[in-house]
Amino acid sequence: MIIIGAGLGGLSTGCYAQMNGYRTSIFEMHELPGGCCTAWDRGDFTFDCCISWLLGNGPGNEMHQIWLELGALQGKQMRHFDVFNIVRGRDGRAVYFYSDPDRLERHLLEISPPDAKLIRNFCAGLRAFRKCLAVYPFLKPVGLMGRVERWRMLASFLPYFNVIRTSITTLMTDYSARFRDPLLREAFNFILYEKHAAFPVLPFYFQLASHANLSAGVPEGGSLGLAKSIERRYRSLGGEVTYNAKVEQVLIENDRAVGVRLSDGREFRSDIVVSACDGHTTTMRFLGGRYLNDTYRRLYTSTIKEPGMVFPGYVMLFLGLRRPFPQSEPCTTHLLDEALATKLTGLRHASINVQFRSRHYPELSPEASTVVYATYFSDTAPWRDLNEGRPEQGTRRHRGRNVHTLPLRHGREYYAAKHQVRDALVAFLDERHPGLKDAIAVRDLSTPLTQVRYTGNYDGTVLGWQPFVESGETLEEEIKKNGPTLPGLANFYLSGVWATTGGLIRAAAAGRHVVQFICRDDGRTFTADIDDSAPAPTHVVIPVTQEVGSR
Image (cartoon, rainbow, N blue to C red):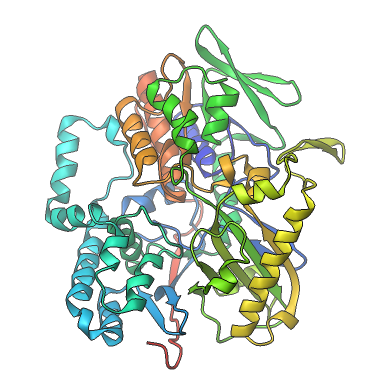
């Protein structure tokens, strides 16, 4: 089996394939594993750009078992703040979104007693979801469940039917509009850091409930550390990874996938090919637009171009600071005034999320220092326009080998926009944390085009199809109905975030699921086991001090 891409979807696919007797090789165009789950060094600082919370990093749910099977968490400390996120309004007032429903209810009632009924309704739903997580299916795809298994799954949800029904049919934008307090009316939309205008209430419950159950914290070692742990598990199972190997084409003979051709012309043969990289690249370039049914053709030729159908990219500013900022909040979404918002190229919503990242990952920066991570959802088109048609990806010889992710030269206006964003954000942060600007040792700013360069993802998206809208719903239904395959093409499968919707746990689960489909097609019994080579993860809860005067 050849697997294209060493992101979490590809690594997971490789692990489960090795567990089931397949001999696998992963080809990855970057020089590191992880895809979007990554980090990079600037001086003495490591800038971690992915995991702010990891669903399933604690027990009591099927997500956790997947991470343990992949060896992702063993031997590490899982860190949980008692506040999921803080949303700070333009007037300085703040909402602390405690994931514990009792504590959250008390806090919200202090802010707005007239909203008591709606507050209690939300917190009651959160309590119900904490119990619901235990029965949520992740281990086996619905498309492989028999009739009895499906009925058993549905029966397990019956005690939570009402909260699931109401939360999945009510948009958070509509729910939050019922609050009388103007800050709550706006802040609820930013619980998950950014505004997700198409999300119903359900995913807000899911994340907060997981966090309350100590199953949505951050893992020691960060994002790249997680990816390398899974890579170690994969290699220990006998898998092989080739880096700086950019696939250009899937080889096909008699409507069967038989291998891949790399950008340097080399060909590698296999019995099975699994693509765990960008979906648009896979379907339209590797396969030349062939083997698409009406659903996939519509998804990849028209739906993908429509606004809101693909998860957005990010603008990310990292600052490495020479000194600590002990009063800093680990995670805060700031609602912005128009004067600042107009300076931030591509900004989708008038907000930024600011994390003092060294509170999450102290091991990734020197002692007595600080890492700041400021982000916002960004449209790609403005950055692309500023790039003036220059290449967004390229291959160059570097130290005797082809490298596919080296920096490229962009347009002058592109760099001017980056500098404007950086300066505006630094000024904003320095105003709230005096002395921050003078403490900067290193800094880095990336745009959606940076994601394109490093991962090849369509428009710099970090998660592929947007859930809860036409694109994600259509894709999920197609996978449920026909599995992660393409019609008319044998021995070819899809994995990773483009074969599902959601974040890292979905990508990891997609690897498990695709191997279950492959085993079914080969007449094998699927098997998986937990990695016991290191001790079980430990957990610590870190209190967040509420700022004096905040309500």
